[in-house]
Image (cartoon, rainbow, N blue to C red; front, side):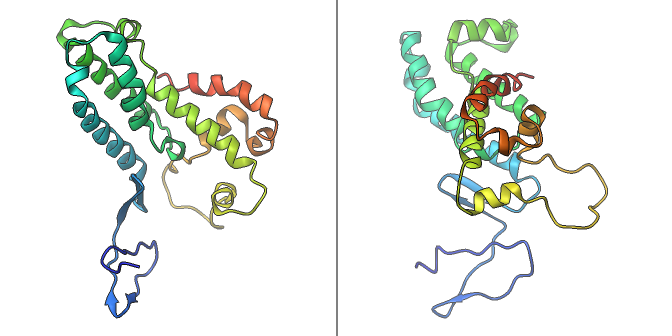
Length: 219
């Protein structure tokens, strides 16, 4: 165990933690396996922003191809195999608010325009840009990944923490004033109902609902 690389996060009182006599620092957020972990109420937004920034960096790593004089088919392959997976990485855990959905679509469209050398001032419709690029839709792919993960998660037969936290209904008592934050399973419940954990046991029914869930992402 490397005490210099080890950090502590908590959503309760901070108490001194030492490893081999060395004080371990408390932090508010941490990046683990490319994913940001945080107790911040804006952590969902921060996760998506981080993925967008990382994806732009990856876009420019391949800029010699995406901005070069190469056939559009080659550019599509690079975008679908390198850029879209980067943008949707970890999307299984996202809460898809309308703002998040809109942001994903906006930034993918910006990359498409850059690849096709189309300027905003030309006022070319988004549908025409997609018709020309024929790229995999990042938002649709992100929602599909979440739907598949939800089905996989619900079929666990043991008591692993990921399933237990999904079933958790929250602490007892009155909640604070104001509109509650959108929860991870809310968009799934909107389509599959409150008993989605039971419905998902039927793989065929769950598969049929997948397309409807991904199409809900278009805002």
